[in-house]
Image (cartoon, rainbow, N blue to C red; front, top):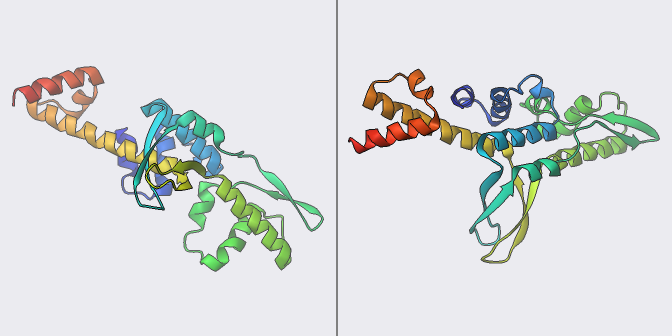
Length: 223
């Protein structure tokens, strides 16, 4: 937990997702995983670390109310689409199209918005060229649809105004927030026990969570 937090604290959201997989022993080749497979692994990691139930809050687009929703990690993982490459029939030929990866997202940094469709087309379907404008547009639309399908989206309904909408769920951001909160809480416990008993960080972390909780309670009773 602490290693994941320390490694990802000063990184961007994309690197944090890969850092979480690294901390969970799944870092090898993670940058080249299809985004749906990356997120599926993050959901399994979340379930193993914090349990299967995710408590989330969304903002209603109709009235601005906070809407609480409980999600199931396994159900979300099952709902994600396929990570397999696909073929697209364009202009009388079959074009191989591979799924979007974290490495592809990182490569788009600095690419002008108007150049982005062609940039991704060249990366994800390198055997497609040459394509005329119409066929290129068809392939780019397929890439955009594939990227949208990689997102986990939940149906929401506001109990206050009755508005209904679909909300994107970012497992990487959600899991990172949980890891960060747990790491900071753990460091606070280390500081309290070090202050009370003079123990080192390693000695505190060597305690089981149950024993650490008892020592914390005793230390706080004495103050």
